[in-house]
Image: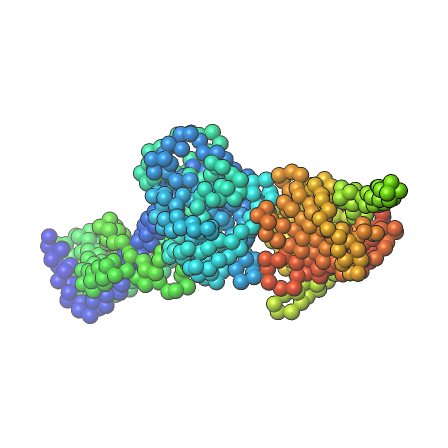
Length: 390
Length: 244
C-alpha cells in the first residue's frame, strides 16, 4: 500500500512530464478502441445486411453452382427436391433461378445475370412484391448500382437476351418496375431480378432452381441428392476474412501509436532512475529492499497507463458514444468497393473490447516500465547516496 | 382445249423440275460453303461510336469444326491467336502470355469489340443439319434473283430458332441472312456486298455483320485472300501453336 501511495505521489509530482506521457498513451487507447470498434461494427453491419438480403439462414446450392465460376452456371439448375418444396410452400424457403444473359440499354450490350425469384417470397429483404406488376410486360427489379452502370431508371424498357436450357437464343423487353437501394452489391451489380415463374418459362426450366435460400434460424440441414447445403459460416467466410484483413491492417496504425507512447514511457523511466539516484539511495538506507524499489518504479511507470485510461475516458468516452450513436460517414466512393455498408458505419464498442484494450496497454506499459528498473538490482546504496550512477 | 391443258401441265411440270426444293437449295448452299480446308487473310472493320478500327487476321480452317486464327494488325492485337477445335475455343494473348478457354458467359462477349460474339463462331455452318427449310418468296438482291427461304430449327439445341436466308438462284450462296430469337425478335443480320469465285466456289468477299440490338453500323468483314483445299499441318490446329 505504501508503494502505491508513494508511486502516485511521485507520478503526480513529476507534473507536466507525467501528463504528456498520459496524453500520448491515452491516444493509443482511443485509437485502438475506436479502430477495433469500427471494424467490429463494419463486420457486424456487413454480415447483418448480407444475411438479410442474400444468405438468409443458409442456402442449398445446386451441386454445380459456384458463384465464382461463370463456366458452370449454365448447367447449375435442377428440379427442386420434394423436401424443399414443402418449405417453400410454407414460406420457410425461397428458390432462385440464375441464368446468364445480356441487356442492351441505350444500344450498348451489357452482360448480366438474370435472377428469377418468387415475387411473394418473405425470406429475403428484397422488395420483390414489385414483380407482381405484370401488366403485359416482364417486370424487372434492378439495384442502384446496376441502374447507374446501365443508365436505366424506373419505368424504362430494355431488351434482354438469353439462352434457354437447350442453348437457343431468346429475347424480349423487360420493364424496370423499381430501382432498389441496397447495401449489398452482390444482389445488385450486373444483375436483374424477374418473377421466377416467368424466368422458368423463358428458360424452359419448369420447377427448377439454382439455389434455395432458407429462412433465418432455420434448422433444416438435410442432405439432398444433387444439392449442397451451405451454412452461414461458409457463406460469410469471405466477408469475415475481409474484416480480419482490414482489422489486421489497421493494427499497424495503432501499433505505431502504442510504440511511440511506450518509447516515451521507457525514456521517462530511464530518466527517473538517472535523476533519482539519491532518492533511491535514501530509500534503501531507510530499509527499502531493491525488489521493493523495482516495484515502486515499475508501478510508477504502469500508473501512466491507469491515468491514461481515465484521460481517454474523459475525451474518448463522449467521442465513441457519439460515433456509436450517429455512425461514421463513409465517402461516396466506398460504395463502389462492394462493401455491404450503406453510407454510415456504426462502430460497436463492447465491454470486452474496452477492458481488453486497457489490459493490453497496461501489460505493455508495465513491461516497458519494468525493463529499465532492472538496473536497480546492481545499485549500491552508498553509491546512490553519493549520486554515483549505477 | 385438250392441247391447251396438255401444254399447261407440261409447263407446270417443267416449272416444278426447274425449281429445286428448299432442302435441295440449302444442301447446295452448304456444299458451296463448306470446304475441306482453307487459308484466308481477312479484315474486320469494326464501326463504333468513336470511329472505326480495322483488325486483320489470317485463318487456317479445316472442315467445318476446326480453325486457327492469328491476328496480324493492329499492333495492339498482333500476335493474338484463337483456336477452335470442335466445340471448344481458346484464345492466346501475347501481352499476358496466357491461353484462355472461352466458355460460358465469355462466349457471349464480342470478338475484338465487333458485332460478332465468340458463340457466333461456334455455330455449325451446315444449315441442313440444323434447320427445316421453306421457300417463302423470290426477290432480287444485288441485282440478282434470289429465293427467300425460312429456316426453322429441327432440334431444341440450336442457337437461333429461326433464320431467313436469301439465296442466289444461280450461285447458291447466301446474299442476306436474318437470325431470330425464339420469341421472333430479330437479333442479327448479315448482308453480303460482294462475292467472288475461287476454285469453282462462290465466296463472300465483303459482308456486314450486325447485332441488331446494338447501336452502330455493324462490323464489316472483308476477305483479301483465300486459298481453298490447302493441306493444313496438324501442328497448326493444336494448342501448342497458340504460344508459338
